[in-house]
Amino acid sequence: MSIAIRPEQPGDERAIHALTEAAFRDMPYSDGDEQHVVDRLRSDGDLVLSLVATNMDEAIVGHIAFSPVTISDGTPNWYGLGPVSVIPSAQRGGIGAALIERGIADMRELGARGIVLLGDPEYYARFGFEHDPQLAYPGPPAAYFQRLVLEGKAPTGRVGYAPGFG
Image (cartoon, rainbow, N blue to C red):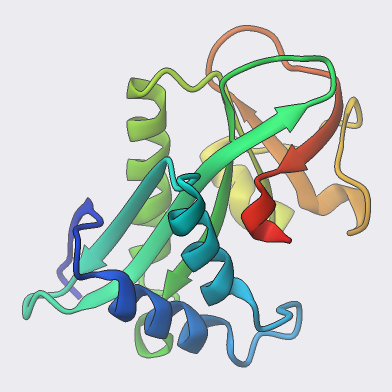
């Protein structure tokens, strides 16, 4: 599928909500709240970067969100990646990877020093993400919490996500 990636625009909100709900509907690790997380991040002003992938008909088929995180050691300019959503009929076709690559590049341009995420270590390793035992997010299995240093040293401590994550 040929896609174009662009920043979210006013009027995309409903399509992003529906896409995110559909993308996570049958995922065993999902709590079914991802679409509401994106809505809350947007309404709270914490959606630092929101990109959509569109098909030839300009329908939104993918979305990625980045929001600020806090780190207990005080390191600034770190962000959380997620959720990443791809319409179920197009999953495993490279749309998510294209959104992640573009998102990382855009976050670097915005001055991000690093990015954290919760996700499959095997999948995200290809983008440079790795588990760092010095950086903690309590709850899920530790190996699924990963980081990508874009500039400077890796921080240490406990990570907190934006309030939109609940």
